[in-house]
Image (tube, rainbow, N blue to C red; front, side, top):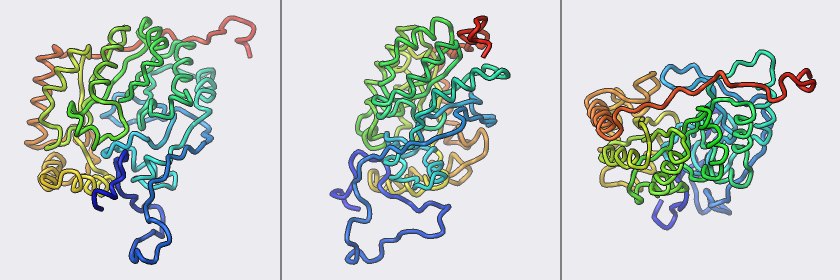
Length: 354
């Protein structure tokens, strides 16, 4: 694909075949096509009707067990996103489809309130955006994430959020109320301070400077914030670790975490295509360094190693990260959120009996 055919504003430049399909489209004879094989179609928003809304995970290397994803697929278009593979379960491609066909759970708040009101419900931390960003662009119009936060306030339920979108500012009123009761923490993802890298790697996201201002705003209303450097891509943004942590600390982040990029499933081919188009001078080295962090492979499913990597390269990055967190954040930690405040708002009333 030459530069004139590059899909600006998209991360993936290809739409690989869904592994669950027995047939696939191939472009063998261009002159025989009546239309472009891949078009620049607009984003589609597809309603879904789930019967439950809380996803549960028992992965030992994740800091949450329950999560809610109001949207499946993500218009941000981050090239490395591990959630791309899950789009295949919906019958779509992990490539361009992931960014252009967004599944929307309009009844998310209704389902969550039904869950809260079950007689056997036990409150525990719920993560918003365990898979895809709950503040992606369509949230501005639909407000599903805000409706979920309103329930967290109403029922005094602990919630954690991970996002890279400054639309979160819209909900500062709710976040301030939750923070006052020690019921919320936020992780803001920034993986590069260089705008050139951000535009290529995360084409429809806010700038790093805007995200740092988001951290500053959250800290200002009492919300504990973690800087999430995810992912570190050796040879692309690995030289920014110290600068990023210092900038996050200056903005008010109390701690930081990171992941090493891993290219499971279809993401491997999508990322390689992107890498050779955007960084042809170093593509082979970057892939080699990624392999060095994951036992000689670009994909990794082993708990622990899949997140932080191993080997000399990964150990070097981890050492630099820890030193920077100690230096700029004094090894700070996010506080434990309260789980003992959960209540039915109409408890003790006649209405609460039904």
